[in-house]
Length: 119
Length: 409
Image 1 (cartoon, helix red, strand yellow):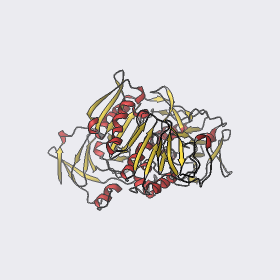
Image 2: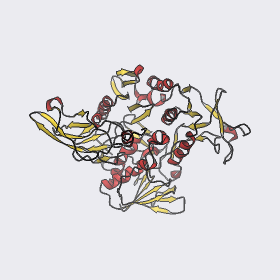
Image 3: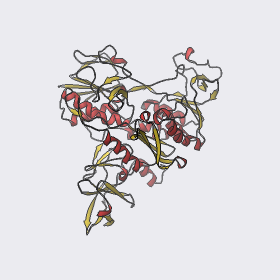
Image 4: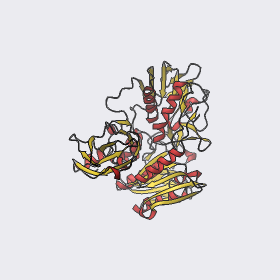
């Protein structure tokens, strides 16, 4: 498990980007729930932590794809593939994330870069 | 409602079809498209598609396994609408009778008079246009971009990155001056100058010339057909001649509404619509680039030729169609668009023309990274960000929240 930050440091409606590889964003919804998903939009290289959080849905700040924080599913295009979700624990006021062991759905430009090709 | 025909198979048409199904419509759904392609995403056509970083398969808008239970009629243009029986007449002679019609026929690129049939002269609107331009850009050489809108600025950026020598010709004081207002457009245009892309602003274009031996092409000597040789130069209004191996013409688009003329559907620079996409004819709604929706914020009808409008607005139009125009609706969010140029993210939301002041709220144009807020009488009406994604999203959300009273049709 990876410590993220104290729950009190993450106000409702805000997101925190955890700089692991690939990065994970942790959202504190207006209803007080905490979710963690891959931070990188599956469509193109954009940080979902910078996105528009509404209910249990985040809209990519760039091209307006929407993802369900609970399932990672795409609610609106242009993204076609879901983001991974990660287990979140809050222990003694501290947020922890258990990273998923599934393969991430990274956008083509990032996947190409990781494979050592020009993006 | 037993049959709905969606005329247009790009983002707006697909979004309308998805909204209809999402809102419970389970009748016959016919999607008609002039192009032979399934719905595809156009923004990459001026960027990653040209460089080869994004291929055609990645442009597909439909998700794997997505099934709208629709009949697709592709590669066939609609040529007329009979409003009495709401029949859509097709170019191949067929007709599709429907109870509801969604007009999503988009817009077509304006061309430079006299450039027909001259190799090396391109417009950029469709996948086929982009394929042809991609192949030409791969040859390298001198590119002249005519037009200071998004297509022009983005193609200039992409081609610069591919190693071409680029000149951008814009009629306004700078590229994007109409969209961003002159001051902020000047700040964003520094991106071109930074890279050594040549900007020629404040001048119109008279025409293009062919290679020596080819007849000159000007608006008054327009000739159709192919085999007229290759472009050699762009002629400016001020008499200058700019040598060119490739020319991209990005001077706007005209709404594809000719097929509706005489049908009874009111047209006025696009299909004239209410703030929910309803037209002058019951059972006919319009979405996307061809639709001039009433914008309460402007108290005027306006075509919004942006991706997000084509994606978001069809939900309201589908609801209006299924309810006969009685569904309560939320006015659309303020226009939002993005542009990627030279690796910099430019984002804009709202209406620049309404503003009486613009202030830099964060960052500095000198660093090519800033956020600017446009205000009218002290109230924010638009926001512009250059590489300020997080802050931009907050402002965009604030603009949308301030502008979203719930109304009824």
